[in-house]
Image (cartoon, rainbow, N blue to C red; front, side, top):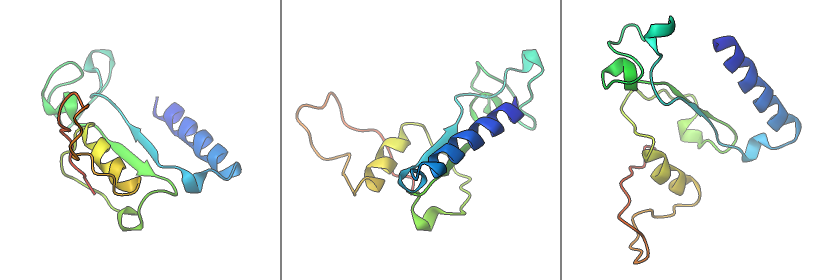
Amino acid sequence: METIVDESVLNVTNALKENDMWNNTLFIWTTDNGSPVTVAGSNYPFRGSKGNNFEGGVHVPAIISGGLLPNEMKGKSLDGLIHISDFYSTFCRIAGNINPNETNPNAPSNIDSIDMW
C-alpha cells in the first residue's frame, strides 16, 4: 500500500510541477485513522487501531508541502497535537490573514479552530 501511495503522490506532484501549478499549491496528505490491525496492519508502537480511541486509532501522519507553504514552515517537523478542524484557521491565515473568529451574524456557530502556524 505504501508503494501505491508514494507513486500516486509522485504522479500528482510531477503533474503540478509540469503544468507550472506547484508554486500556487498547498499539498496536504493525511489519513483519517490508524491501521486496521485485523487485516495485517500495524500501529506499533501505539496501542489500538482503526475504530477505537487509543492512540493507534487516532495518531496519524500529515505531510504538507508545495509552493504556498510559508517559508517559516519549510523543513519543520511538528510533534504536537492538531485536529483536522484546525486546518481551517491555519488556511485562513495563509489566504491573507482572514480572521475566522470575526463575528458573523449569519454563521451557525462560532469557529472552533486554532491556527497551528
